[in-house]
Image (cartoon, rainbow, N blue to C red; front, side, top):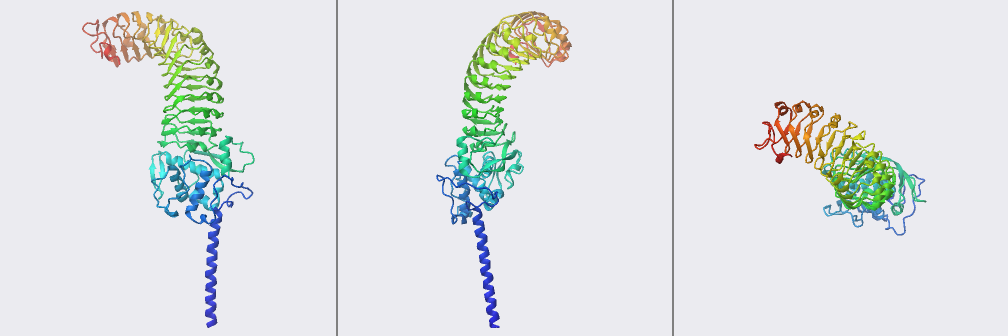
Length: 588
């Protein structure tokens, strides 16, 4: 019995010792999995280069036994990789699991992001315990995309509850799953650096093409983000500059949100970028970086509707594949770079609503593919360069509200055979109105109001029959309304106010089936109000104030129009009981 009791004690002790050994082995395995140099979960044939001698020392085996060391290891990767601006990331953990006070109120947004990843993000935690931190570029990507969410209105706290949730759609974001499944992100298999030094060297060397990694570097094929498309999604906040470290990005589409910040010079790293769409975000500031000229794959740039300032960099001439450059509605200044002429594929150039000055470069004629050119609402001056006549694919030309002067020659207009819309109001153009406008086969809009033209209206103005809108107001046109305007059978707007036109109102106006607006105010017209004007079936607005017209406005015209004005005051000669206005005071 005594022997049996001692044997039981001995067996119990052996069990306890074995259990302790197993527990220690499990702890040792967990420690080993996150220690530098262990490659669990990574290609076993992959040899990871030694850390750079200039890099910060790796966490020791002893320090890795604490949660603080887990955080420190993750922070070290990001700091050594120079992902975020200096000073925005600290290796010190504040979470209660690592002995901190849990107060994240004083942390930078970068530090809040990393705390969330280490302590709340299931995917990131799996990398910590399975050796996944060795794939440095994938770790960086997870950090950047989470930081992007935190920076633009989508953030969770230490309890995994939403602090901010402004986005309209955010399916699977911050749910612990693969970031490639997050709404609005597109991924593809690309080569990924597995250590920090190669990643840093890459950003210095700017060799970010998919097929061009640093010679001798260690890479692994990994699903990486190539596209971000979160348009009109109520993003609110600032665009983190770290987003430009996602070197495989091909598309950034964030238009119509509420995003501030700048287009950082690190955009140079995105040399696979094809679409940069940041327009109408309202709050982007700073200048267009000169480094944008290094993105030779870029096909379209939409950065309008912001508060960008400074000059347009001449380096845009390097964008040989660019088809659209839209920087409208900003505070840009300086000249239109002549280097745009080197963008031989350019189809759309929108520089309107800025503070640009100088003249249109004569090299404009080199843009043989140009279809849409908008430079209205600037401070540009000079004459139209004769090279415009070479733009035989141009469909839209908006020159409104500048300081252009001189004549618009027949030679220029005759060469614009594809032109559909020409607007050049509120300038100082003068001389004769070219009779070539009426011969352009596709021209549907001609707006030249508030200039200094001094001629008759060409009888050829409706030769093509394609005009829908004709606005010649505020010039010094003289003579009569040519009968040939009757050939404009699809004309909807005829605005000839504030000129020196005379004669009687032509009867053909009542036969124009598509005419909606007829504005003849402030001229020298005489005679009667055409009796058949009410026969125009679409006519809604008629303005006849400040002329020498006489007679009575018919009840039929009263009934068919929405707005009607004439000289119907006591001193006037028109009887119009239904007129909305009898003088120029209510023209608008």
